[in-house]
Length: 546
Image 1 (spheres, rainbow, N blue to C red):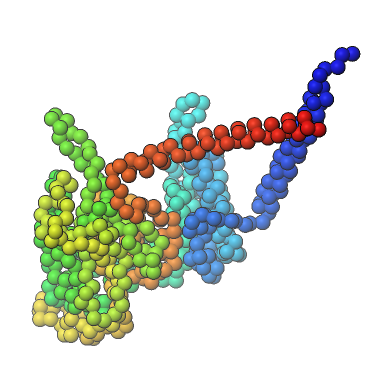
Image 2: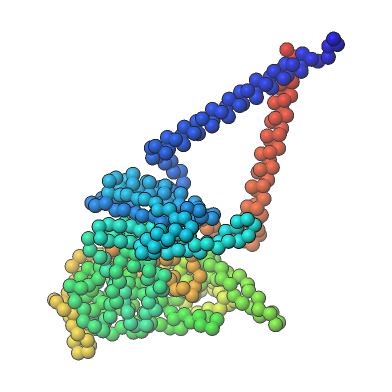
């Protein structure tokens, strides 16, 4: 038999490779066994390691506190279709994990169950509809074609004879808030009433915002032309964008309510902004509320704050016979990132957009505690005599324009004497008096919020979810409900650039974001290939040496 040269080398090489393959297979098998053991342990004992910023995948401290304080059982019944297309299939898993965590903190006073829906299950559908869970139409691609079918993704919370429903779970981002607020509402011993000033040209709350407020509060219209009974004062008061002048009697009634301990939020405009038919212009606006604010030392500046950090808007421009949509920067819609990290209203937020807003001055506050919640950037300025607000106008700062940062939203707490120590003459003659004794000073600390715009919740102005969160946080601050503020703000983080970028820098960032990831993958592949080549060369050298 003829011997093959290098046979010993080949045999040793095969032996090394065989031993290495054997060791690799053992490592893979060990990893599979380890992962299977961890998975089985996870099914038997609950535990979670949440390393995300703000722990967005775990119940907040506020939710835990509410769950631990439950006095009687809360039952959550989840009505879910068994087969859901993506991304809705993940909603069920997320909800199940969240409820499992809730049960861990609620103990015997928290129970949840899932009721599965299979297509054409009449009994399920009847029960779900009777509970207020609505079917949704879902589309999916199956067998190379689009299919449309009904699905259910809702939940019902039961507490004694009370019921709260989440008809459709449309997003998991605010799911903890939806659950916790309903638990808090359903277990409350008495309803909380938020008063909303009506009349005086106030626009009222948009339907979506009204629904959001109603999740935690009953609302009551406050009409200053009608008698006011201190025994029926609301727990808080919202004054949103009045357009008409207040008489002395109406101001006195408003002040009496605040002196009696009703905290108030003022979302006020220093100028009237007209955006109808695409015409953007401003005119003077006088309501008389400045007198009451001035008594406390607050002032709404008669001008607009503009900022290089602002919202882009879409406008139509005519080019011959065509209409072209252009995206332009609009300094009159500043994006505020200078938010207080101490106030519960803003500490878990990164930004809020305050359109057509006027700075708030606190220079004349002589008593009480002032906190500035929102400031523009140092790249902001103020225009005091603007009339045309066209997005195509030149808003560049003039030499005489005041420069920022400016305070855009503040809170004031403290004891104050009445601006009207006695009922004014017009109140005695034309409108009914306030029932009960006339207050000449506040019983306790008054609590006031003031923002220089009412447009932050205007549905005609594009804004992200942070504006609604900001508004609702203010309502909760009035009611001193830090728990709801903490849960709602969770996950509301955004990451804008902290300074303005030039067009060249924006392009660099854009292309870097597009190319760095693929380049990193290629670099990792090349590095791994070279490492394997070095390893093979090392094995060959060792075999030859032996």
